[in-house]
Length: 136
Image 1 (cartoon, rainbow, N blue to C red):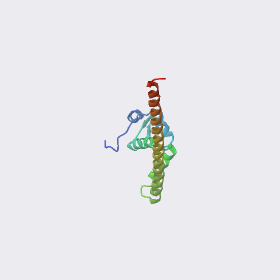
Image 2 (image 1 turned 60 degrees about the horizontal axis):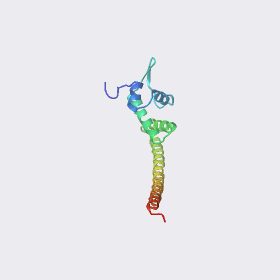
Image 3 (image 1 turned 30 degrees about the horizontal axis):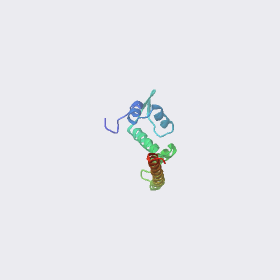
Image 4 (image 1 turned 90 degrees about the vertical axis):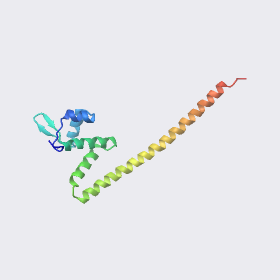
């Protein structure tokens, strides 16, 4: 069996990606993955596995399931279609800009936290020095 023909069970994917089978079924209900059915069993293809991986990565960087679905639809349509590829790139550029802004916001907050922490340390040192000095 070649790598493209390999199939997976829902339990295997849940273990591999450390998610619940319920989560995988939810992504299926949302149209993000489409396993083959054999009776009551779901058979996931390499494509389903990759889409699950990309969905989880998308969620990790803050994409909604609708945004992930949109990207999948654009990718599916974009194989050789320049307008869809351009739209896909536009969406990725917007996401990149939002992430860069979040990084900057985090850096600003980190500097504020570090400044407040240093101020607290100075106050504690002063309080300790005052407590150690002899009282008249």
